[in-house]
Length: 161
Image (cartoon, rainbow, N blue to C red):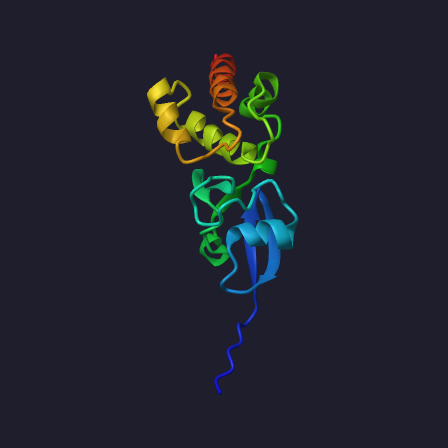
C-alpha cells in the first residue's frame, strides 16, 4: 500500500503591500490561501474553474483568476485583492452607480475594471467590454457595472489633471 502525504510549507506572499507568511500545502490555490489562511474574503469561490471571474485578483498588476493559480506560483509577486483597492475611483463609482446587485461578482468586476483603467484610463466601450467579458454577473447587473466604469474614467481624468 502506498501512503500519500502532502508536506506543508511555509511561504511569504506580498498581499496589498504587506508581507504575509502562511503555512500551506503546495497544492493550495491562491484563492484558498487568501480566504482560509489570511482571512481576505473579498475574492469569491464561484465556479472554481476560471469561468466566472468572482475570484479575480491582481498579480503584478495583471488580473488573474485566483482559483486556478497556485499560491506557490505567487511567491515574489505583488498580489492586490479587492481589500487593497480601498478609496479608489472605481470603488467609489461602483457604490455611487449601483454597480452591483447581489454583490457576489462585484469584487471580481471591480478588480478587473481597476486594472483596465490603470492600463488605459480612456478605454473605449469596445475595450471595456472586452476586458469585462472575463467576469459574469448572474443577476445581469451589467448596466450598473458599465456606468460605474464610465464614472470612474471621469474621476480619473480629474485626478490626472
